[in-house]
Image (cartoon, rainbow, N blue to C red):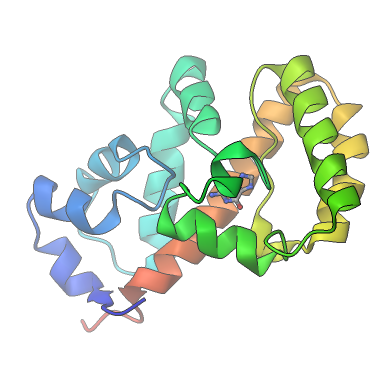
Amino acid sequence: MPHRITLAELNGRDREGFVAALGHVFERSPWVAAAAWARRPFAGLEELHAAMVAAVAAAGEERQLALIRAHPDLAGRVALAGRLTPQSAGEQAAAGLTALSADELARFQVYNAAYKERFGFPFVICAREHKKDAILAAFPVRLANGRDDEIRTALDEIAKIAWLRLSDCVAAPSPR
Ligand code: GUN
């Protein structure tokens, strides 16, 4: 990440400027940053992250599902076509998903389809915290869960993704 913004700078921004800096932290869902803005000033990165996670928790199931569905499949069609957001592209590369064998790629495609068929939303796991083998091992385990558990797990993984994205773009600790 070329430029990291300070917490002091973020705390001083209007809503539009705040969203311009942090709108990408939750995949294609800038409304999360917009909702967290009302809770500023933030004394630390953890507090900012907690406000964003709280905004998701307060949003209701419809918007939570829309947030989950905003995530691209791992090694999916959008990834193969090179049309991921820059953050997503980096995350998938970190997990080793840009160097899959034909057999591994086929397994991802079968699992992605089975998961979406069962739950109606894509499989989300924090790709920067899991290598491809761990992700492939997680699929059958998660496929055996109930839908409410999977919504909760997806939102937990999204919170981890957001933490890493925030740490990338905000300079910490804040000058006070
Ligand atoms: N889909 C499943 N996992 C991930 C992830 O870590 N990042 C993104 N952008 N999309 C995902």
